Image (cartoon, rainbow, N blue to C red; front, side, top):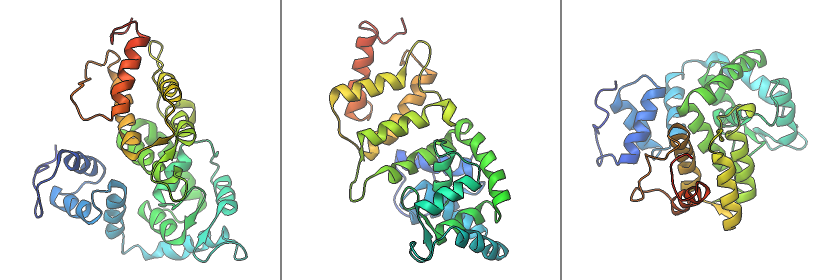
Length: 277
């Protein structure tokens, strides 16, 4: 149990959403609540950035990794085509090949989140070095071992899954857009909610939740997925997989309108009831 989870050493009281983010921070990093709040405030309660900043500060003395990591990074950068201090899609494909990672695995997005990639298939030197220093890896062999751990953590640890899932929203947006195109979002949902891809199940024998969601969205004709809908869908699906009768459902709760309508869609699928038939 984390002591003082509702305390705020300075600044305004935490909202319910911020308290939940603080709880997630403390589940990942063994530190005091006051320290966690400090890092979360610095990053405007961006959990991924706050965790990265915390561990970077914890590992500032680990300078021995910089030189070997720089060598690895530079081996994938093409000086003729890549900008300084970054490598693009060609280098990224070779990198994942060397890591023995298939491009249709969720762990690809786990590495992108770790290295804070600015876009799909793009690595910056700063993000690459900071990310791998964070987990103490400086060689391809060590990175492969960490990826094996990450493959297990993503489906088994909800906080890790959620961190990678939420970061993937940023990677999936087209340049200049605030939301994600439905076609791209659908591909990502099929990846994250599929155990064969390294994610979690999205369908059960009695309730094909993911299939129903995609069918509903296609019928509705929604073109762009907002950040709020992206994040809340994962919360909803997790709850629905645990409680298929949707006893947790409260029409007065602050769910996005599209999820409210989806519950009505599920009710129709079940012949006018939310109970599993």
